Image (cartoon, rainbow, N blue to C red):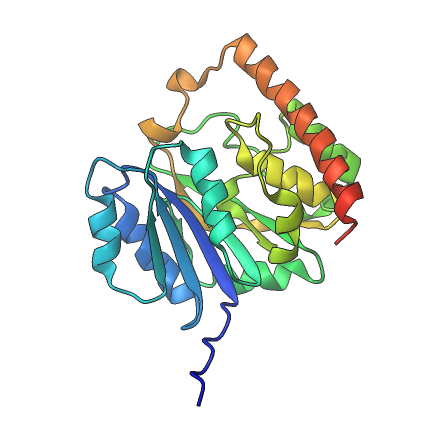
Length: 251
């Protein structure tokens, strides 16, 4: 008899890890109860110099797929690799230092209601919050495609990657990330969801999002030139997403 084929995961959680020893065990502990026995947590370790890899391996759960990168490529390309490894029908992004609130997975999947992407709000904790952290997504805006895309470019419609989930069918348009992109992969993914007119905003908080020195801009201020470069990149993202949408077709 041929060996039985392992069931395909329903849920893939994709995490980019780098020097996350301080919080990664707590984050993993909040994720594992949310996924089923055949689901997976894909952790791509971007050449951490601390105990991140050992701590993840030490959890000793068969649902965890730990991938240790050969070289450091930064968080954007690490998330790209993690998404490329995903096998589940529903794909969730995860930071290494947040905490998932109980019931998160099923609430987000239920919120899809025929759509292909869902983005919730976050409860920001520990560090000082700025004006961007106070931006809240509203369910009523889910169908305002043009306004949402304009908001991504201008900066008033913020989508946190750690608060995202989508059906794997969107990976055909999301991957590969544009070659020019070196930040804001979450806004790229949100652009794809909006271009497909298949995104829904879940107003409730589904995670505790830690704010600390490693994920905050110093003093909360970005230079005008950096802001301009980011806005131009978002315009390029929109053009790229529209081109892929036309190539692949609506999903």
